[in-house]
Each structure stands twice: as structure tokens, then as C-alpha cells.
Length: 206
Image (tube, rainbow, N blue to C red; front, side):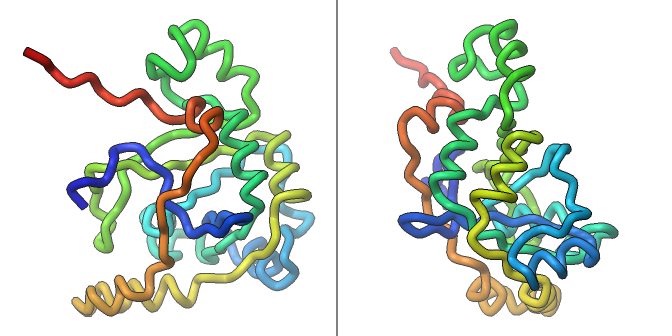
């Protein structure tokens, strides 16, 4: 899409929910999908990354083929929880604007419970696109909120990932695209957007 902004969150969402994706080994992913919450072996004291982009998740996990990422999960969380994460986030890399100068950014990064980074979105062949996809890293405080408060449902999307991948490999791209989860622009409260959106580049004048 030529008119797609460089930085914008696109997600499957409702008025009250946002769907994010993760991939785990079967020992974690299968019980999570079965029970609707993560098993006791899921570590709450380490950073966990959630991704609203299905295609970026497929790039990260190799369509569920990479070791330790064989189970692809769609995790439906509360929109309020997702917005809390963004309001308390710090960008992983310094960008003038959201966090002031480099020293202020470093200080913010040390205490923020959430990190955000923007990586190139991917097409069906997992090649980079000009616009970016957001990845949200939840530190221990945020990870506990995620697991205990925000999660509303967990689905195993591994069969869907394998089906789409098979269609792409067979050259049946239109059929593959039709199966992708619908991801629409996600409106953000101004205070959340201010934390994570790099300023628009200035255009030359005169």
C-alpha cells in the first residue's frame, strides 16, 4: 500500500479487545491454548514480546517451523491492557521527540516496564515492506499483568499458519491472502501514541 504511514499499529481488534501473536514450544503453547492461560512453566520474570502483526510473527517464527516456536498462538487481550502497555512504554532505540534527549531516553529505558520497537512489516513471502510493524516487549511487571489480567482467550493458530504457508509455496497467493487475519488500523489515545510514535519527518520547503 503506497499510502500506508511508516508508523501505525494495525491489528485484529474490537472495541474492547486486541489480538496479539506469540510462538512457543508445544510444551507451553498447547496447554495455553487448551486452558486459556499460560502454564506454570511460563516465566513471568522475563521479558515477553507480543506482536499485533500476524505476518511479522510468521517471519519471526518461520511459519511455526523454527525450533522452540512450533506453536503459534493468537492471544486476545483487553484493549485497556494493551493501551496501558503503550502508555508505560519506552522506545528500544532513541528517537528525538517521544523521550527527549539521549540521556533522558536512557533514564526512561531503565525504569519503563515496557519496550516498543518498530520493525519492517512483511509481505506473504516474508520480505520487508516500507512501513513498520510494532513489537511490544513486556518486562516482568507488565508480563504479570498480561498473564493475570489482560488475557481473555488463547487460540492455537498453528494449523492456519501451516495452511497459509502451503498456499504461498504453491503459488496460490490470493487464496493465502484471503486466510490472513484481518488487521485494521488501531486508533490510540493521544498519550499512548505520544509514547511510541516517532515524529513525522520534516519535509523540505522552498
